[in-house]
Picture 1: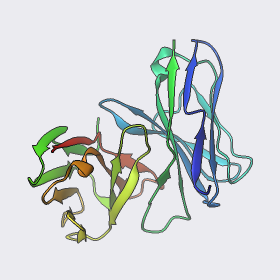
Picture 2: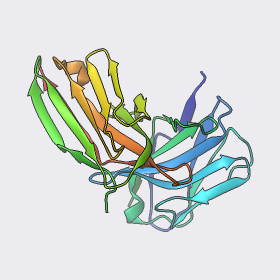
Picture 3: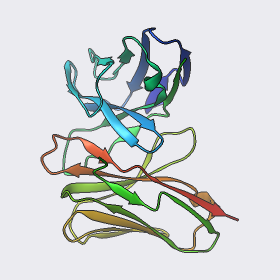
Picture 4: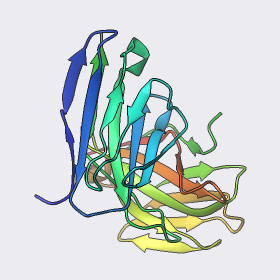
Length: 114
Length: 112
């Protein structure tokens, strides 16, 4: 089905392990984003990408790595997971920028770091 | 520091009542959006406002963008249980290189 998908939907991992969260969109949108959502903080931008092979840091990039070799995929890697990275992670996409920065979100990945 | 302040943080009302949710900032926004998020799902875009003073209506929902483009409000008339959810405002700050800043949200519960 077309749209934006994330996998896995739920993940439990241990402190220090590497974890990769996947994001795939079928709209060929140029822009893709990774957010984390925590109580009291709303959605905070981790990284974003304007096109394949172009990525940039957001508000809270420390401890995360992204890549974008193909337009449709934007994986997020936690190199060495910490308990503070327990959160719900959302991927979003957006078509070429205009005056309306309207983003379309995936269903989220709930990550627990023990 | 939260650039976008939403109020109230929590709101519980009876079906049929009216309510208003506020989104305020000291920054000027090129555009501002409202999203609704249900448990276990991602936010879904409701509306985008781009012009100071703009008012948009979506059935029972009325969205207003402040004249100075620093604030916005969402008014729901005759709320229904289906309106229950987390309402998020998000703004593109002028000159912010295509990033959206989100408010922390208003959790609305409409009781039958």
